[in-house]
Image 1 (cartoon, rainbow, N blue to C red):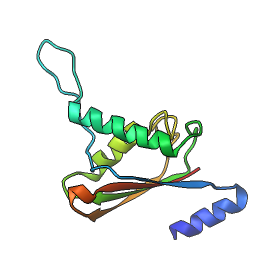
Image 2 (cartoon, rainbow, N blue to C red; image 1 turned 180 degrees about the vertical axis):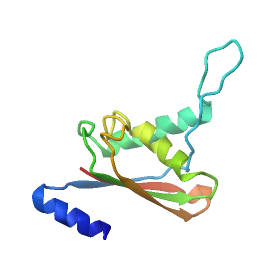
Image 3 (cartoon, one colour; image 1 turned 90 degrees about the vertical axis):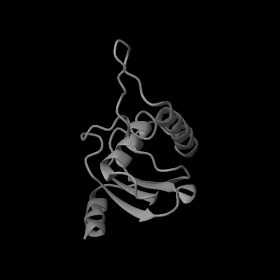
Image 4 (cartoon, rainbow, N blue to C red; image 1 turned 135 degrees about the horizontal axis):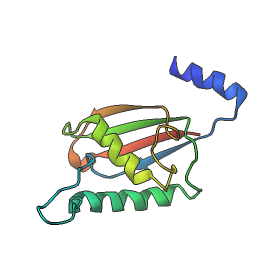
Length: 131
């Protein structure tokens, strides 16, 4: 059903897609930590993970950030420790200004995800971006 919609759509406009595979552990989006009397900060481990993923994204996507994404499919392979929205949020935040301009719904209006269990050492993230 989903694929049929893209076929109909592609009759009117050329739909391009690109697939990415990032061999990184799965990571949930983190909230800023607040220490009384100090500026809020993001956890170091999360920021290091984002820096690593951003470098991998820049290796695999060398064009300008997309102004519009028609659809995005996430494949998460790893341990069952996270909520889907936090896994997606971490990837969205990292891809901002690299693969897509930003992650507002106007730019990324549609998406889906699948998850498969694996050990942390065998984790990876697969993206398919239609634009």
